[in-house]
Length: 156
Image (cartoon, rainbow, N blue to C red):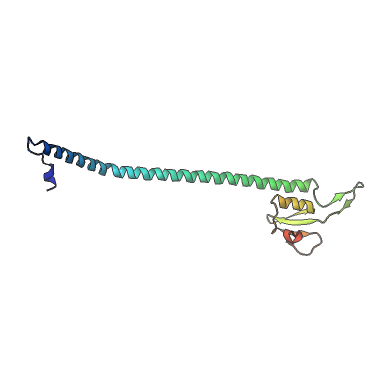
């Protein structure tokens, strides 16, 4: 019965020819849709995959840039600690006669599994403000028997 609708009408009936032409156009549109629809869907999915891959790539680039900045910051902080140790920014101060006077307490702290110091209180506070040491960093005042934390040495 469906195929019978595609038989051309008899010659001379204009309305039947218009109906046949309309039915043929609709059949053509449906056929094209069935061919193009999967292609459109696949194209859109591929575009979304590419967009997601691009977003992931951008996120990875941002993470890499942040990691490089963190590495640079850590290197700068390590340089600060080393410079403080080299320039004598620690607890021993020398008077005009050249003899060493311990005018402040001497402190040691643990960083990256190594004991650092000696540093004076001012230097240790600078390191704290720079983020090199935290309230939980193990620290000790010279002469103390046990290690404690920076927070216990310098309560707020």
